[in-house]
Image 1 (cartoon, rainbow, N blue to C red):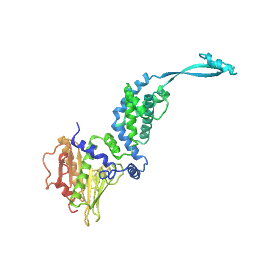
Image 2: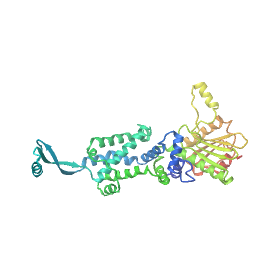
Image 3: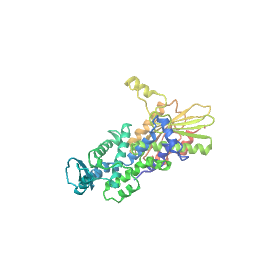
Length: 408
């Protein structure tokens, strides 16, 4: 059963993959241009959609590649076709007496006609299977070459599925099925067929067709089904916390100063800038960063470099920068823990305390640091505490929003 934060994330995350989609129906062309500018990859949207499709249907891919399709190949039946074959100067096989006699009477005395047999595998449901496997291999190869699938993590088994599909297509009777673009007739035949491989091939055909959809709502549904699957549960929770904070900030800014703020946001990808930026016409802005080392090093990092030769940076889960008009920037950091374990939450709270002192020069507002947990926090935030703890059920408290945006 899904938790409330997981249901929230499934509903809202796909829109955050594409700019402004929470306000308007973004077109595919616009999304493609945006992703190409952001990543430098012309096929970024295609790969994102392909990854979402694959991640959302891994179990179906496993059953198709490793179970249903191998069984179908072993049982695949063809129809026997008898056809005439012409020979010159002699023949092998069963002579077609009438056909040969007609040739001889026509003056072709060295020609012989025989009746040959061959098996044909051109039933419409078989054509659908062959072409679906071919398209699936194209998708899997593209994602593998782009580094999306690998020998570890969520996609560890995908390359085995790819290898099995390639073997079945090139080394079995499946290669004798003709190539032909499937249509409604092929889909109907697969639907009525008894073998489950035909049904799975039909499903995968429809999934692959969805990758070419031009309807933004259909694209969003595809992303919703699979875009989050490759992520670890704690990463998904971090994204839920980040998106909820973005939505709460936007709602408050619009409520207090309607029409004055614009929101710009980017994808959650490496080497990005801020996750989101709110900007007002007078130059004031609010920026939210996810899993990035934004603030200058403090005593803990300096000591680690000096005594332990460790040059790594501390990376708060979220960093919020606020720039009031005519005033200095201030920051707030957020540590996120997907846990109900008291020891884990205590460790997270102490980490938030460490951030409070490590970045003390920039943490000048209230709260200075926040722990957000998926498990329950028994007591509400106290204004007297520089570091507070809030659970998902109460994220984001109104008094915290007021403190974060003070002075704007």
